[in-house]
Amino acid sequence: MLRKNEYEEIKEAEKVNTVLSETTSFNGVMRFNTSLKINGTFKGEIISSGFLIIGEKAVVNANIKANSVIIAGEVKGDVIANERLEMLSTGRLYGNIKTKKLKMADGVIFEGSCEMIKPSGTFETKGQAQNQ
Image (cartoon, rainbow, N blue to C red; front, side, top):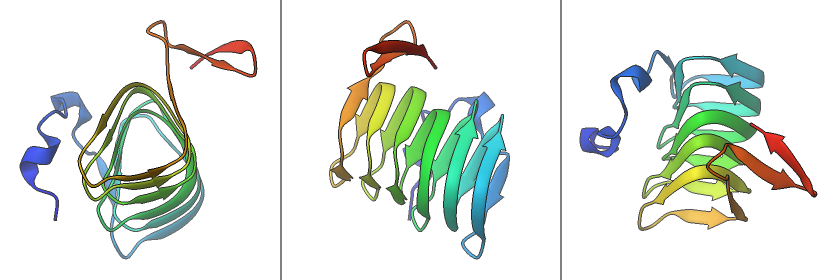
């Protein structure tokens, strides 16, 4: 189980507004502006200007674009986190990362490549700068 202190860095504004429980399964495109925690299964695409937490028992097969992401469960897909990506010790990520700030705990499983976004919020893709 995740302990409360593992989320200490979450700002007050990033408290979780919505939770998809362990018994929830969702397929499709998920868009939200505030915060979401996934504890169940999700397949599709996640797009957010907010904050996403992938719970310890979650299984997510999706490309993710969000402002901030914490991964404690399993993600298969690429992750773009405009501000930060944090992987807790139980996190498993099979995909590529693009982020401004990255924090990985001991025990993380990560298979993919990592690209750090430049401080201006841009990154290079196939020779062209894109603003995220």
